[in-house]
Picture (tube, chains in turn yellow, orange):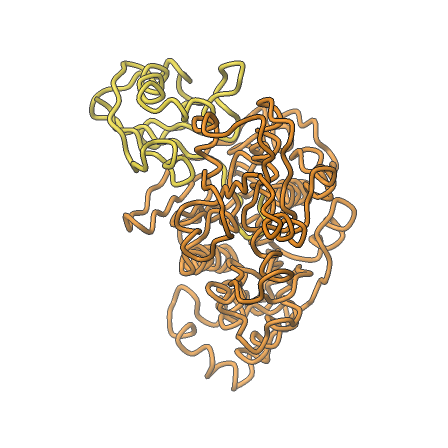
Length: 94
Length: 389
């Protein structure tokens, strides 16, 4: 099972875990397994059309999947999948 | 950063030589590097959490000209992390407070105060006089504005961002590196990501990230080391772990790609989906003042006072006879509410409760109102004994 690192803003939708084990041979399958365990995450990762949101990047180890094979990027048990959303910080924010 | 020391007439005074002696004795800086720092012109956007350590260390390092863009005043809630300001500065302009502190650290430097909000109208004019920009802003519209202006002007943009216990830093440089839009083509829609006012931030975190930005700025000026270009540094303070991800230039990037479609600054509020008068106007029709809520409570009116704050916030202050459902839990706990009931939503300042109101309205609740200004306005207008936070 691959390890998925959950960023701080999304931990509240993933049982407050900072990492979750998920099965799958591709990034798409791993994220399906993840959102299967934590259904609230789906809305935060995917748009209503089912596309990965453009302010959420996914990396396999240190590579951005946009420059690999996107959802089809292969994942092995030794890989770490990172979800890295855009954060603005500060007190006004949104 | 065209700082050719051989053609420039800059020199250091004996006082400066003594002040910078720990730089001058290192071959990586030495006299040549210190003169580069002295001739450098750096713009800080924001004098807040990230701007505080940036202002302190860059002035101490001897950056010759430091511009600051900020129009905010120092607030008590800033002091937990914005270490450039002190308790006596509460109520002062952040620009004045920061500039005084920086001049005290190093009277040899020039500090330029830009008391404006950075906008599409003034950004190019302000940024063009500086060698680089350090982004210490706190909102998405300004981040995209800073990015695009830097790309258009060919200036490096030293980026840092924070949330709770987690930070990001990188250097966006236009010559050979990616830009912010390569990393994130679009911002999150308003409401999906909580702000630090709602999410909180460890006071030390902007110190760590701001100091990383300051380090990168100084390295760029000196031309030494390996800059954080094409690398996104992630910091998790809870795990005390740094990670590094590859950041690539997007050949199709609308601003720095091969065929850019953005050739001038745009309306960034529109781009980020944020109305300029955020939220206030949108919910006016459904607002109720705290004083009116108090009257309803005193009369014993039948209604549900729905507090959508997080459980740990209830430990700070509570309203009378409230029902607690944190905003994030509202979708799956909505069955606990009755559409026949009158509901007043409340949070800390009225933003999350406005979102709760909209969600309830969309879910068929017809009698919902939002307590304007949240518990903070209640504390200001109804019950002075209640703490604000």
